[in-house]
Amino acid sequence: MSEILAALISFFLLNPIESELSRRLEEARAPREQITSLVQCTRQATPVIAGRVVEDPMWAAWQVYDIWIGGKRPESVLVEIAPACAGPVNILKPYLDGALRA
Image (cartoon, rainbow, N blue to C red; front, side, top):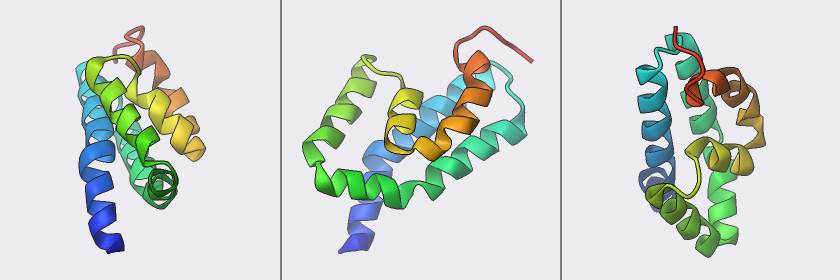
């Protein structure tokens, strides 16, 4: 059962966050190593994220919806649910904000 839950969380929450962040960072020409670091952090945070989703599934559904409609930035949701990813997000923030292009 936990494998099914992890797959659903990955599909509906983590994959959209990862995809959007990777797309924006690649468009901004952020260093590949830093993008990889952020993706690894996201994947390592899966157990923490899964715990949050299990505790509050409506919160998770709202986050997916809010990202989808553009109401919330994916990196904000990631840092909210996985504070350990704040470091990689902060390093890449100039690229995410469009202020920096390599």
